[in-house]
Length: 203
Image (cartoon, one colour):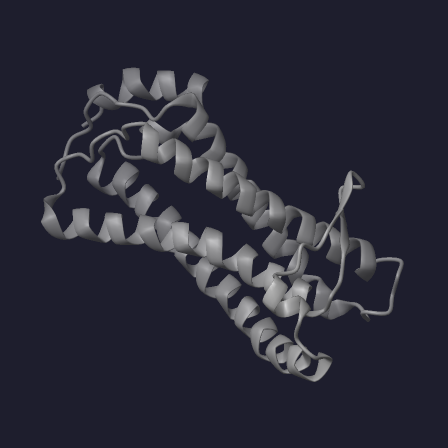
């Protein structure tokens, strides 16, 4: 069993982006699960909830782009000694999570564009920005693409949440099973500082 070593932490910006995007993803997925309980024509709930779902999706997309840019310009902490297989699995899981954080909101954007629908983003501005190739499509073709992409968007979300579950399970495994510093390096600053002092003394 590995022993915990002092934590080489992520930057405060990376930590903030990680937890903020995680909260937005979980909240947006939970919100989407309520849609099936309401009639799309129910303006009292469905319309504002659907608009909120799309606005949060846009925030996830933009924050993910910022996170990728930050990641490309800042060194991340090295992984602890964990063997080649676990290291490859960790890299693959992180890559798939980034793909999910991009593809899920982008597929939702495509669905929105195929509807030629605009939505309010927290009441600040209206958003649609359809791609030119979609704007030029005849309605019948847009309906076909919409009917194919909407279920794909749903399934992408389910697969992504499964990846999130695996990610959480892996973090807990590192913390309680291998007892290494993987989780501590992504904890918020106050708790992370305490973790850095205590992880090295735990056995």
